Figure 1 (cartoon, rainbow, N blue to C red):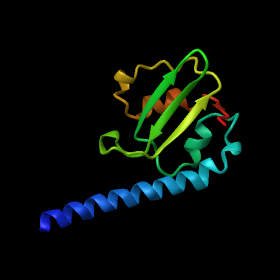
Figure 2 (figure 1 turned 60 degrees about the vertical axis):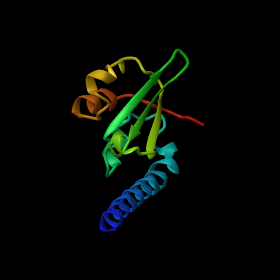
Figure 3 (figure 1 turned 30 degrees about the horizontal axis):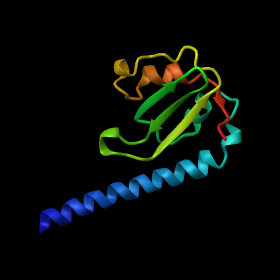
Length: 119
C-alpha cells in the first residue's frame, strides 16, 4: 500500500508541476505574444524563467515551426510552446544530432530567428 501511495504522490506532483508550467507560459507568453512577434527568439529566452528541455521541428515549403517541451519528453509532457518562424533558413540542424535536447548549440542556432504570428 505504501508503494501505491508513493507512486500517487510522485505522479500528482508531476501533474502540479506541469500545470504550473502551463499557467506560467500562458500568462507570460501566450497572452502577451504580440510583444514577441517579429522579434528574435532570444527575446523570449531572455525573459523566460524555465528553459525548454527538448524540442521537435517541422519544416515544410509553406511554414516551419518548432515545439519546445519544458520537461523531458520521456515523462510524457503535454506542456509545450509552439513557435512559428518567419524564415526557417539555417534551422536544418538534424534532430538526431541534438537527440531532441535543447542544449547550448540548439539555443544558439534558434535565438536569432524571427518569430512569426500564428493565429
